[in-house]
Image 1 (cartoon, rainbow, N blue to C red):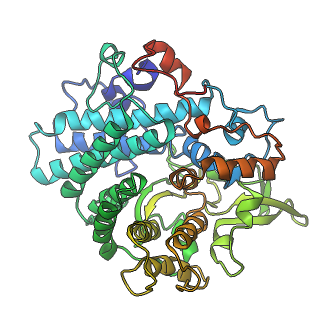
Image 2: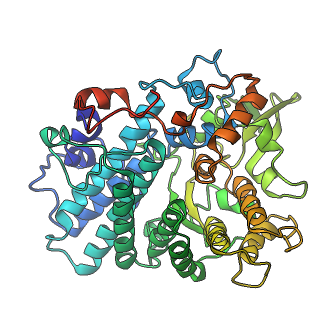
Length: 491
């Protein structure tokens, strides 16, 4: 990859300009280090791994770009001000993005920053003269984070360069777009190894939120489900269940003061009020201009729930009030109508500095994935413990909606459709919807209907080619290799 994506030396990505600070998200920048001297002690590797986590927070990743590529792209959310359909965010929403779209470029770049930092650790960890427990943990964390990034990349862009070591700028020019099967094979390998290296839990509060064996196994189960390896998915997901549980109150999952809980399997941590900032911009990006406790806050109303999303909840579903709203105060006396995401509501310390963490994997997701993997192997009318309906109903009853019976869902396809609907409301605004639409082979059908219904587009622009994002144009140009590094069809 070119210099501003991957060929910047991985060590510089870790050392120069990292905003990590002393603990898990609190590591002071290092200066005057070289690749030959940096990775020497356990503390050095700890800082290197922290820098990989830090890249997850980036505006090029979970800090912003990913929910544009994964939620706004779907029928869950849209852009509040589409700018006469001319804005780059609107292009993602309306499937009109060019190969130069900055969200497309940032999602690709941000993912390879994570991978580069993980590779910098993995290149050196096996030969490191540090204690074995630390070596196992650091290696496991780096493998998990690299796998997570490749899982995002392959689902967004299709064939991508599979880079598993630090590369020089010259070496990176020879990268090719590997086959999708090769990328998934590497993801599986990384996660299987990570699961054997990582602990089930951490004993100190400063480590809370780091990847665990449960994180690796849950992500592996999700990978298997995406690959339709149903038996493998069920086997690995069952190993996860004993170590986590559903919180009684769904809304508690998303409180800024509750970033890690019995239900959270892996989350991207943010914390407001620090300098340099470790907060996020979710409030200012997603909220409308809203009046709260005597103060008017500006908001962009992006990642706005669609009309169809608002209608997706059943009447008694507690998740609606925890996830979104349709009314707010514009000033002390004026109520306004308008849809907005409430799941990440946290009053900012300063503009663009909010503290909610972003859930990537949680127990309810694992339950629904397990239900899906069991149903795809064979339909069962049972609602007993261990059945697909049992796991589905555990998620539903927590939300205050009626449990399904075999009468409600008498066929395999009925269960399949119920799971598709349930995942939408349970995991709303958590970057799963676009991938679920694709995984259920509903991309053209669902999104053409969405574009017609939400925007009145009589002739939607969506084609099968638009189910993958383009490779950023500057990547195609710098490689200049139509055989090994082609653009995706249709762009």
